[in-house]
Image (cartoon, rainbow, N blue to C red; front, side):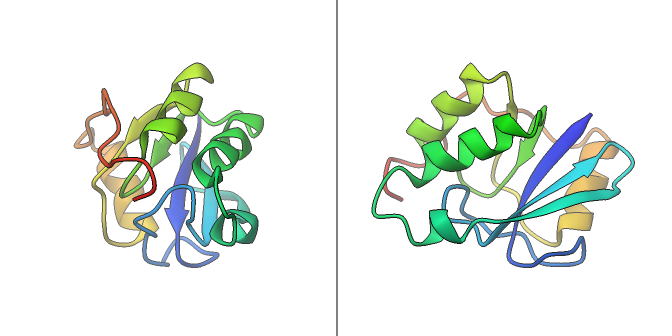
Length: 119
């Protein structure tokens, strides 16, 4: 299973970025918590619009099954749903801590976005 986590840095000890579409990085890890790729999301950070949709496509193109983030708006959420990606929102702390919570079964999948568009 591949997991994506929004991050302020390029490694597992970095703090999570609370934004999805405009996160600095999107870390792709396997189910064992091994870092596969640190995706630089500067295109999303600097986008005038559509950042969530583009980030959703980035995640889907990497065959991710679960996204862990702080906030996910409606356009991004629909993009992720269409790709079959399960979304966990309202997460904070380090990437490593979020992955540990997922592994322990402490995280619930969102049924809807948790912020409005253009949050």
